[in-house]
Length: 126
Image (cartoon, rainbow, N blue to C red; front, side, top):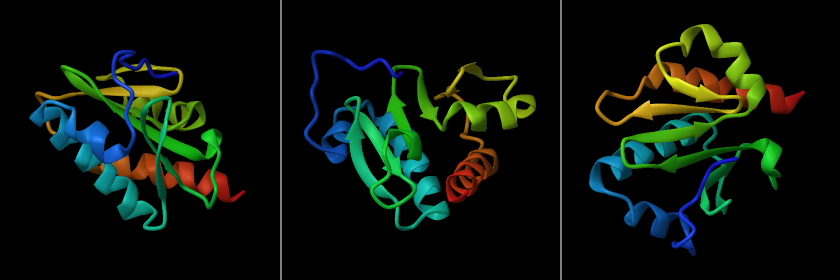
C-alpha cells in the first residue's frame, strides 16, 4: 500500500493537494483530470491518507484508483491486474505490484494513463 507521511493527516483531497510542492501538485491535478475524463462520476475521497477515486458508485478500495505525491515523482495505484496488463509499456518506470511512479522531471504519459484507467474501469463492470 502507499506510504503516507505520518505527520500529516489530511481532512480532504483539496487539503492534500495544497500541501504538496507546486510541481507535485500540478502532476497530481493532471492525474485527477485523467481519472475524471475516463469516469466523470468518480467519487473523490481520501484512502490511506491519499487521494482515491471510486470508479463505481460506493466503490470500495478494490474499486478505486489512488494517487499520491512525493518529492521526485507522483504515484498511480491502478490495481495489480492493470499493472500486469500494461507491464510491457511500463518498463521505463519504477513500479511495484499495484503501483507506478511517474518522475516529475518528465511529462506524464497521458494516453497510457488514460488507457490504464479505462482498462480498470472495464474490469470493474464485469
